Image (cartoon, rainbow, N blue to C red; front, side):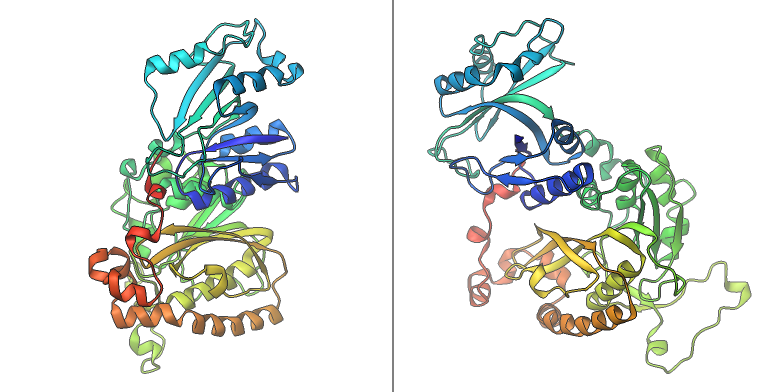
Length: 481
């Protein structure tokens, strides 16, 4: 059945991947189709979605972070007269179960691109007197919620995705996102934070992309302060994390302000384990395979924090042999580390995921790209994985970060590992533009956080076919509606 999905005007590139992932989570191999209403822009918050049952539609909408509401559409028109005709002709057998005396109801009036006064909203609600509601109105806990959604017309310059003309939607709510999660898990209320703590909204989206559900085991190899694992734990998963910095994992800022306290704050199950481990030298046994259902992480790529791996400069150059820690220093010793390039980090991450993910398990992580690049074009083709989706989030006029979702579709073997190593060398060459430019013109962090005026947008970027701020991305993409 076709349902109208009304999205929050947030993270536009993330909307379809999230709904597709949740459809797979609750519907398995169920059929999924997606289309725009007539005359609507691609960035419109309205999309029609085909799902096999209302039960699946309700679960998808309620678990989602970006779905404002999902409706069984009773009518769509361009005037209230046309909408009335369509609602009246909607099959009676679909309407009657929700109009009875025993049920309560509420009509929610919402708009996109315009604002209605309370008197105008009341007038529009009263215009639906032709629907034979027999139950009583309940504005707090109605059994059935109906939505009247009105969009602006093409002549309004509101900075939002354009529509050809005003459109009216009326339907019964099947489900919608629980946005109360976001203020509850907001970083501003978090006990233990670090410079790389993942925003709660993005963390929940990543968990949805990874198909997290109760009983699954989720691993974050760059756990930091645990923001991603907190989201996974909220959805019922068992969690496990690792970080190269023993101070983050073990101590935090004291006994009552550490990674563990973030889980206790929300009364969530504690991680199975948090270990000090190096992604470059993973501690797993060589024969250990397929133990994690999902790996979710935000690898260090030099914007908020640079990557580190075990070994000082002398050790890496072979000047000095491996250092044996004396017994008296083992308790408080902090091993020396060396810079860890993004290319090497991603190669190691794919290798660990290929080994330790179960078949069908998902790897979800962020990867930085230049605005004129596509991550799937420069990213290595690993034979163990199929790229499920990639969603872009803008960082600056030059760089964005892409959320990549990959699914394990083949077993890890020695031959696959060797092919991955060769692909890694090609990946290093394709990635050279990003790293060379960072060395010549400053770090990636300086490119992300520098003002546009300092980037010589008018001259330098035009030669690289990169657009300036003014016409680079639609301004409405940063609005919250």
